Length: 148
Image (cartoon, rainbow, N blue to C red; front, side):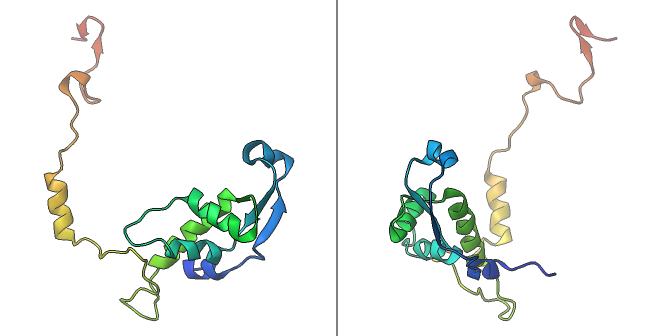
């Protein structure tokens, strides 16, 4: 069986959305009320509403998602997972259109050419080990000095 693409995972609703009561185990952390488990596409939609150059958080997305279903919270684990699925699907290449993205991300930028990445890394300072810290390859010593 072939692996599903990110796009296929995004389009699979998995019997969702579902609103449930917050159980006893969850109430200690999340409080009382209801939680919603949204579909991957419902998590994807508010991500596309974020203006280019702006930043949002998973918690801000969860607030929007919970309000749309009248729930107290949006389930944090699936919201994070579905946000990842949406991001991966946005960057996935459609093999029927070689060289084109199936759906470009709102704030995608062209990749950096290899030459400029090499020159950037050459200008960065290199981390070095201090000679006083010793080296894993130095000769073994005793408390009073060398073994010899």
